[in-house]
Amino acid sequence: MAAQLIDLAHTATAGADVWGRYRPAIDWWAAIIGRPAPEPAVPGPSGPRANTAFIEWAMGLPLGWVTGPDVGWSYTRQTKALGNGVVPQQAAAALSALLRFAGEATHT
Image 1 (cartoon, rainbow, N blue to C red):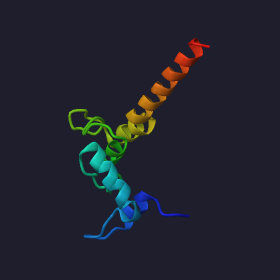
Image 2 (cartoon, one colour):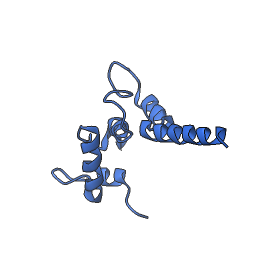
Image 3 (tube, rainbow, N blue to C red):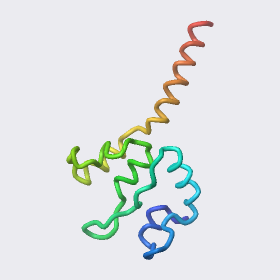
């Protein structure tokens, strides 16, 4: 099985490039949204776990949208919200396509 991004985070050593082969994609997305990627993993109660700030960043959400201290959500609630969330860019593309389709359907 191919290594996943979280596997790289678990096995990274200090000073190593945690992104490995994902570096070009991470840099590309960071340039688009205008902020660097957070670390992909953080210490958890029983070892490294996914960093919800990274998930939020990868989805293109504003900084702290789900993970901000003012939101006050637990790690579990953050992961649930992000896992059930919609990537805004995908939602916009879907809505645009649906509106085009609806416009074409009314003119036939």
